[in-house]
Amino acid sequence: MAIATETTTLAPDEAIAPVTRVKATRIGFLSDDHNTRDDGGDLPAEVLEAFRSAGCELIVHLGHMGVRDDTLGRGVLDRLAIVAPVLAVRDYSGKKAGGSYITPADGERVAGLTRVIEAGGFRIGAVHNLEKEPGPAIATRVSRSSTASTSAPCSPRSSADRSTSSRSRARTARSRSSGTACSS
Image 1: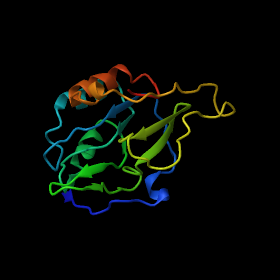
Image 2: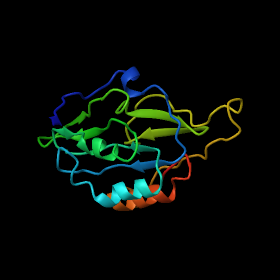
Image 3: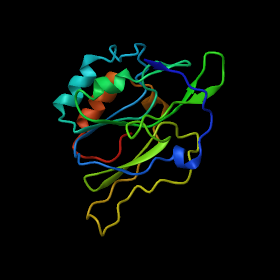
Image 4: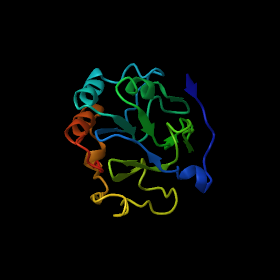
């Protein structure tokens, strides 16, 4: 089912989701799948296989999921959930007639324009659009009192990195699924 939305701004408590704590050490990342079918059926099978063969225990979708242009299909999240639980962030999307909207929340599964996921002693900051301010800075380190590990700093992706395909991103997720906290 497609979801239409008119939301263009969010209150700070909606823009920044509460910290989500999960018990996962192998995490796959995906963004910008831009599928055209409401049920996510056109997500390449290779993406699911990459996450499955990597043993992902969680998949994080970093925005622009499913159908675009005034409606949103969340079926791709259901399809990814066949492999592992899925968490996602909201994002800004463009309308056919111009302007933009913020995609809707969906409980804990799709929350905030930014969110932090704590897993395996790491804090993973998740955001789709680095050019729009969702709110205050996100802490990316877990205090030393709770774990001996800290995450590596994340750096913004280049425009060349942003243009890679879903299959390429899945391969990247597979190669980085050994508990790393950042995906570039």
